[in-house]
Length: 327
Image (cartoon, rainbow, N blue to C red; front, top):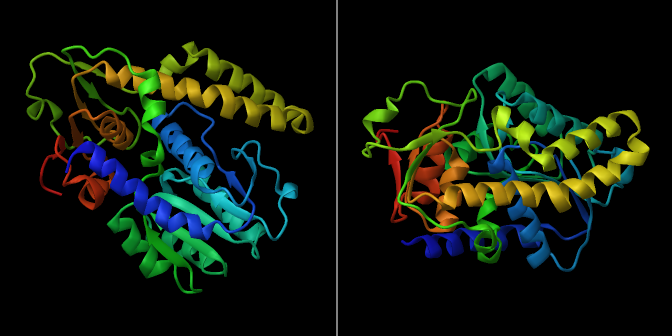
């Protein structure tokens, strides 16, 4: 299957599943007001999906954890939680926020967009599952088969509905991608993450066949993010929001959606599109390569997120490879 066929196939799965679920006005929360371009791509896919396919109901507002205001939600409003790879006990801040929402809105319909699920601690898994199972109107989307199995086993006691859906970034249109593409050069990139999801057991140089290649993380990560003007202004607004939220909450959300998100997507697309071949430890670098129709070799992360997603959705794509082959 080629890249275009795969994009269309995965987008159709998302559309056919989620459109019937969003049958009332809704909010989109837990958005990534930080510089991980992968999470920003998910956000963009969510927004484009909403704009193109949710035409009968209205998005009342969208926000991050920092700008969330529970008083703006009544019992009839659907709460949609941003997708990603933070369902479990590694990125605990987002997991705790989801638990807070479940407790605070027991009557609302809640939809969790496609997530990778991973728990290293069984007690934490059981504790979280108990809270999820107290909610009576919950729809959780797993981003891969492994996550789906965990959710089906532990998170369905109260009748919660579990779906298997691909990443929301596959809803990003080609017009958006092409807008920011840069000229391709005869160069190879190894985009290597630098956080606690890096798999230190892999000898990466063993699998990179090119003698010369650039090696770095997303250009927005680490110390480099301090050079991004759009992020500087967002940090200023978040600082002001912590002190005078009644004034700066809405302003921060508008700025993040209108200026910060496009700037991050532009940064990511321009950076990846200039390389002829990509090796990466980041799932969304591989997904962006698929959107850009660019060959990519994906390495596993520290807990199997990349391999599970690849085996679920990408293993039949020409030009997409997982290394090492053993899962």
